[in-house]
Amino acid sequence: MLAPCGPNCNGYLTTSMGFSQTEWELMQKDLSEVKQPMERSRLGRIEVSPTAIGSLASQAVLDSYGVVGMASKDLASGIVEILQPASHRRGVDIHVHEDRIVIDLYVVLEYGTPIAEVARNIQSVVKYTVERSLSAPVAAVNVHVQDLRVSED
Image (cartoon, rainbow, N blue to C red; front, side, top):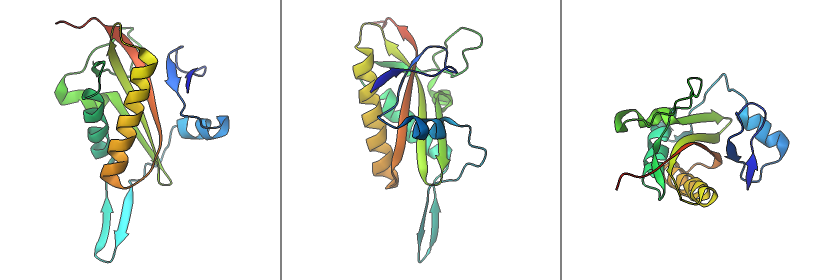
């Protein structure tokens, strides 16, 4: 579901994936204690860092139709910079709280593509990729379209 975002997001569109207002607000809160998805086995435990989850998510985004690149989430300067491949994880925020993974993606899309359709595709691809790789559920994938660019064909 594509909806205008709340008062703290400068009027950009966000996708809420059908969560109730209470669930949505809970997932959007700044989480002071970040836990890593963990699996226990008889041999020990397996932890996956938020950085590793961010790598999975950013690669899935960059492989998606209509995506020009990842963007820095800081819009204070008013300039949207497409991040270089080495720093593309800066366009991804991962929050893990009580085994709930919430992924925020800051993207630059190609001008002329259907924004809502591309954003929904990004959500689906990222959710599938992360869940398949981690065998852990993703609670939300929030897509923040930071800018549109004309491709340089």
